[in-house]
Image (cartoon, rainbow, N blue to C red):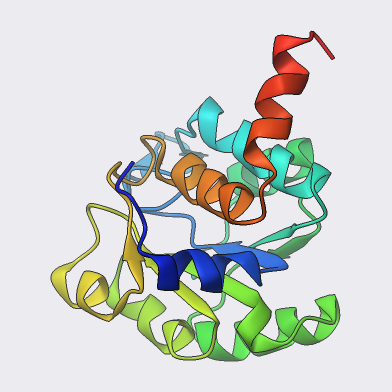
Length: 180
């Protein structure tokens, strides 16, 4: 993980809601469609545990995706993610709705994206994050960029950044070391 600058850590410390794009962030960006139209996605287990650790720490988690996917619905349900918005191309409007429903101010939210459709959300959150394989314009407008690619642990990096900024990461590590 790259070492975040103090400004990024300061912004991260105020985050109460982490919002993730799906394709290219929670997945590698590939979309697999079977012969009968069924859709398959590959998620990284490390990312799922990271999202769970955020929620255990009182940081809400949400997703905004321009695509509608049953695979995403099932994965988010299994992780206990309550804020799920799918099938919305206007991510800024979706972001505004999510912030209102969660009761979170824009500066208390982080958004993680990888493509141009995510840029409008970047300008309306306290912390804009690009994954390593994001298109150049997205990386250019991000406050911070992960080392890992989308679908390959980038979300876990974001989760650990947020937990570290609040002094909570070591607590989680120690709980696992104690077998709790």
